[in-house]
Image (cartoon, rainbow, N blue to C red; front, side, top):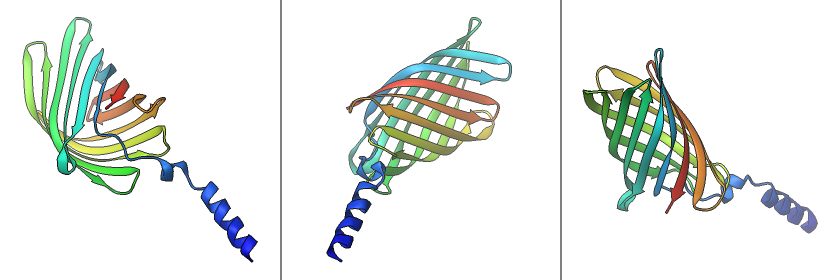
Length: 180
């Protein structure tokens, strides 16, 4: 009987998912990389820089700037915002954010806001997954959907990819991330 209990405990302990051993997602990071934005027939490519910083009481601030080009036409996208992080368990956080948004094509600039809610989870010690729903309003309000993943090849460094859909705008990003 004692052997059976010990064996059962051993099997349970060794088959726990590695997510149970993973830490909560890191909310203090800077990242940069390649961005592709497709709007109708236009296909913009360029660089993206972003950062997020967790303050006290689970409040975070965030910013993202993309400098894109398509055949000599410039598209700049800026997001500045803040939100609230809600830990769901030791490896998954939900979040809710409000952002200022600005889009500029050549000399035409429009600004507005966005709201988002999502989940970030460290499914293993090295893999983070993200899913997000939102509302983006610069000219006409649109629902947004975003998915992403990051692979931490060291405790501080990760590479990742994300895809976001905003009406007829598709944004794909490949980034390198440094956490601090």
